[in-house]
Each structure stands twice: as structure tokens, then as C-alpha cells.
Image (cartoon, rainbow, N blue to C red; front, side, top):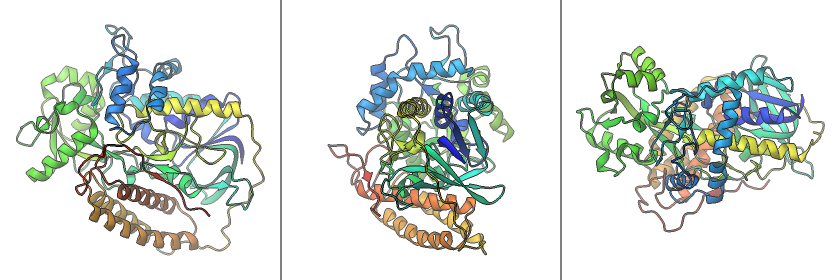
Length: 525
């Protein structure tokens, strides 16, 4: 199949780009499950943008730089923040039903979250991502220039170097059609990686099962640079319950007055930061981790009961309903919470147009490292980044013009067989996620990182042997990519001899005076 633009991933970044280029290009849109199964649909909080008259661009920029602990690119931060209003206006024009507030000069309710100095997070109740993605879904499915390929898993990028050509350019991607088990060849003049982060490398995560770092791993194998992978954001408040899988309790609960307490009811955030519950996520997550270990408890509690039942049901209807289904009435009881892996701040290095170092290849959204998030992402800047870079990459593609794709070889399965023991993949997957949680989590040591690196090397050998001899499956592809991302996370963490933002090392507890990004260069073929 041949396209002008091939977009891999259907989160907000991918859909934004697809809709902008589809007016003048043939677009192939690939997603490994259904269109709305990515992390964007799970986003509860909202989109940070300067909309209110008492807020300023400088304030949003300052808050982002502060949260990023010295590693944000100030020019990139300004670029993104300055495009916040027009990005939100575009979503409103598409019909996204943001929560209204006629008493606000914007006409919309704005909330605040950790690290923000103003109310600037526009939202649709407590299910913003679902509202945004559902709105865009209809436009994508009905667009005559968009071919949607659901149930297709990206295997690897097709590059000039892999084809033995003098010009090293990305020409498309091999994808596994999970329904037929057949690997298909998709060629494109421009290829866009919008596959999200790598949260499933950890045992506990707020991410959906699709967050296996596919784009980061494929870009790395294709020769792209990767930066700042040591900065994995652990969301402070994931619901702690035996029957609740990866359910996030939005930052906005604390923004609207929620208090963190130990099981005996004692508040503790004042012991860790003067901003208390509204401190940035890295500080709150470490504080919770510290108190859980110190007190020997399995979780802490987030208490919003003092705001009253009407307020809670109005502002957090989905959280209220979900908790009630589990027997927790959050209007009368605090919510049991624990930290969980939430966001990959690093990724493939890109410029302001989303371009990677490989011609014809773009990376946008959580797959990329633009310089916006630095050492810690400010709450609700993620959907903003998706919108801004989805639009800027689309503009660059349209300005570049059409690039004809060459004739590409089909996927070669002539020397492989069906796997004899799929259980090997399941065991390796479980082992990876457990040792990443134990050794490369919220608090790290050099010894733990060395242990993780050793285990990763062993897993890589087993997976390489499996990949070389058996037909690819969805589980094998995802495991291969997760192990690659785990290697990048550990390699980056071992290079950072300080504690900064989301990376905290007991062996290097101080912050160095000069902030430097960790940039990994792939080995030359």
C-alpha cells in the first residue's frame, strides 16, 4: 500500500496531524488495536493553555521551566505556550465539549494542577482525552483521504540504509495485520511516529496496554538519536485496588483541594515541600514513596470529602462512578492511591517541525523529545504538545511537497517458522516489568541500575534469537520494543551522575550546577 503520509499511532498527536494533512494528501493511519485505544483517550485532567485574562504567557513558560528542573529548552517552551490558545480554539471549532463556566471570562471552566500558578487547564469534566478523541474520531473515519488500518502493529521502519541504498531516507514501515497474521508493506513519502510512551516497561502504570514504546524503539533502530530517557514520570495518584487496573486519579483532584493523608488521617506533604499537594509530580511521587516505605503501608489516601458531594459529582463524575463500582464512595471516604509510571519525558530527538535526524521521518507526542518537558513534565502540557507539534509537523509536510516512494521489497518469512513456546515471551515480559519497577523506579542506585542492565542484556539475547527464528506476533513485537526502551532508560540513567527532576539517585543526591541533556547516539552500521 502506498501513501503520501503514513501516520503510526492514533492518539491526539497522530489524529491532529492526519486531519491537517488529509486536506491535500493521501494518509495511511495505523493503530495496533482500535482507533481510541491509546493513552490520549485516558487523559483525565485537560489541556494547559493561557486563556484567562489574569494569566500570562510568561507565567505558563515560567511554570513549565520550573517543573522541568533546568532542562527545558526555553525557545521550544515559548514556541509551544504561544500556540496554546490557537490549538484549543481549533479543538473547540471541531466540536469538543469542554466544560462551560459562564462566570469565567473565557466561557469555560479552568482548573489548576500541580506546578501551575494560575487556573489554566481547560477540560471536559474529568474525561478530557475521551471527549477530544471521540470528537476527532468521527472526522477521521469519514474523511475520504484517510485510510484507517486498525489491528495493524508496526514491526520496523523501512529505510534506505536497510535497503542498501546510498540515500538514507525513511520510505515507510512493515506492519503486522493481526487478523491475518500477514506482514504488509506500507510505503510513504513521509512517515510519522506518534505511538506514545513506554509505560508498560513498568509493573505498575497508568498507561494502557498499547504503551510499549514502539516508535521510540523503531526510530532508535533506524538510526535516530534519543534523549533524556531516564526521566520517567511517576504519577503520584493511581487508584490502589485489587480489581482496578491502571486507573488514574487526575491531578485536578489535588488542584481542587484534595489532601494527601496517611492511613491514620495525618497529612504529610508539608514535610516535603512548601507547595504541599500542589508541588510538581516528581516531588509528590517521591514524598508518597518515602512515606509508604517509612510507615510500612501499602498506599496513602487522597481526601476530597470536605468539598461536598455535589461538587465532587459535578467535577469528577467518572472518578466518582468508577470508585463507587469498587465500593469506594469518594464523597464520604478518601481514595487509596499509589504512584505509578505515567509519562515518558524523553524520546526521539526532534526539531520544531517534528523532524527527526532521518529524512522523511517525523516523531510527535510522547514518542518525541522536543525539549518542552525537560526533567519533569508540567501537568497537562502533554496534550498541548500533541496539538502544537501535530500541527507544525503537518505544516512542514505540506510545505515540503510530495515525495514519491520507491518500490519496496516484501517482508521475508522464508526462513522462519511458527513459535513452539509462546510462554517464553510471557515470562520475559513479566520479568522485565518487575525488575524495571524494582531497580529503575522512583528512587535509584548505581547498583540497582547495573543489575537491570545485566538482566536486559540477557533478555535481549533471548528475544533476538526468538525474533530471528520465528514468525512475528504482536506480543513478540511489543516485548522487543519494550526491552529496547528499557535499555535506553537504564543507559541514560547510568550516565546521569546527579539527581534532577524525575531522576533521583541515592548515590548522586545533589543537583549539578549545569543542566545537560542525556543524548544517546545509535551505533553506526
